[in-house]
Image (cartoon, rainbow, N blue to C red):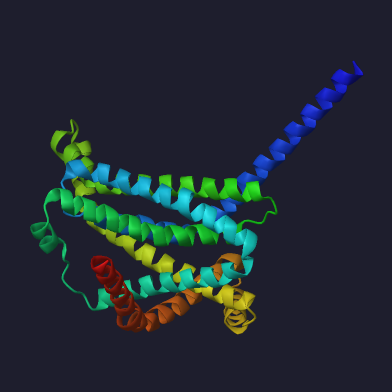
Length: 325
C-alpha cells in the first residue's frame, strides 16, 4: 500500500511539473509573440502584393505555398540556428537583433520615400513578359525570400523575449510562436485577398438587400483597408526597428537614446496626468518610430548605392565562375 501511495505521489509530482512547464511555455510564447507584433503586421501587409494580377482561382494556392515556405524557414532553418546561437554565441544576439532592426528601419523608410516619390509599378509589364506558371513561381519564390528575412527578425525578437534557462521550453515556445504567427499572418492574408471576391458574390447573389449592400460596401472598402494595413505595417516597422536599436544600444552601453526617450515620455505622461502608462507608451513608440524613420532614410543610399551593387557584383562573379567550371 505504501508503495502505491509513493507511486501516486510521484505521478502527482510529475503532473504538477508538467503543468508548470506548460504554463511556462504558454507564458513565454505569449510574451515572445507580443514582442514580434510589429513585424507580424508588416508581414501581413506585404504578402498580398504577391497575388496582384494573379487569376482569382490561384490566389489561395499561392498563399498556401508561401505559408508552407514560411513554416520551413522558421522551423527547419531559423529555429535551430537561433537555439545554437543562444547556446554557443549569446553575445551575438543583440548585434544581430540590431541588424534586423536596421533592416526594418530601412524597409519602413524606403516605403515612405517611395510614397513621397512614387514610381510606376512593374506588375503589368511583368505579367506580359512571363507566362502564368513562371509568374506564379517567381512570385512565390520572391515572397518566401522576403518572408525569410521577416521570419528571421520574428524568431530573433521572440528568442530575446523568452526568459527561461530550459532549452526545451525555449525550443517549444519558439516553435509555438513560429506556427502561431504563420497561421495568423497567412490566415489574415487569405481572408484579405478573397474579401473582394466574397463582397462581389454577396452583391450579385445576396437574397436580402442588406446583404447585397454589404457586399458592395465590402468591394468598395477593400482598397482602403489594404492601404490602412500597409500604413499600419510601415508605422509598426519603424516603431519596432527604432525600439530594437535604442534597446540594443542601451544593452551595449550607449544609454543616452534610450534614457532620453524615457525621460521625454515620462515628462509628457506626467503633464497629461491621465492614463499616464498609456501616454508614456504612445510617446515612446512615436519617438522610437521617428528615430527608426531617420535611420531608415539614412540607410537608403547606403543600401542602394553600396550594399546592393556589391551583392549583385558578387553574385555575378560567382555565376561566371560556375559557368567557367
